[in-house]
Image 1 (tube, one colour):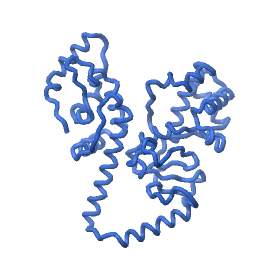
Image 2 (cartoon, rainbow, N blue to C red):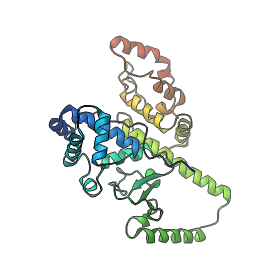
Image 3 (tube, rainbow, N blue to C red):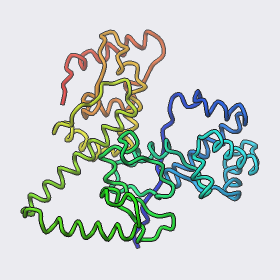
Image 4 (cartoon, helix red, strand yellow):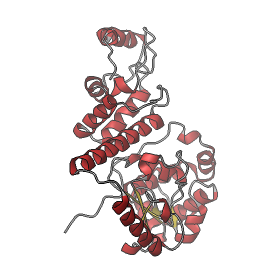
Length: 317
């Protein structure tokens, strides 16, 4: 029997200004430090279990209360969740209709964290994303998303890659989609097998590269934007993915964004960029912590001297 597809993620990132967010500050004012501890525990459970949502009931509140071990009773957890819904930290419509906690921001973050998967399955009744808005769903991720009904029946799966499936009766639209694809297959110019495989590989390569670049843009906000996807960049991305995987790439981006030295706070007024970060040698050093911040001016001077040769020999992909 095949193993079920993994939904959740092994770890998740938290915004640096998370606790200065107005919603969080209001929740902290109302529920105190116990509320913040419980929220952190809930977010870990949410991202780990389903990736973008969690089912709410009193049994689950008891599990959270037991797991968080911060003195909050199951009733306290339930009241805290309702407070999160009231403050719009979790979506009210989905919570009231399905007793599920989720939000658009959680879903936006989730699809970017799993963008290297072949398929991203979302429950359509819980989905809050606007598929026509690239800020919600980048084009290269959109084609990987498959919506399924909350009843999880096979006939209710909808392929978002085909615009015909946006609305209306699910089963009839899926059938219509299959008919349309069949007609298109019969009318398209014939291709040799090698041409077809090559074109498909090129499309997948571009999709994966764009997904990694989208993650870079969402994390490394201090660095120049990547304006194009060259063949060299595709090769660098694929090489890092083969060796390290998407989670490690995300970790390196986070380390780069946190590094004062790489962001230009050095004696030479130099800063890194996407190509420099993705180069094999530089990528490994960032991952090993060579560019992590050090305390004091002496450490900064030592760091600059250590990398003098590297700064002189920077090469772009």
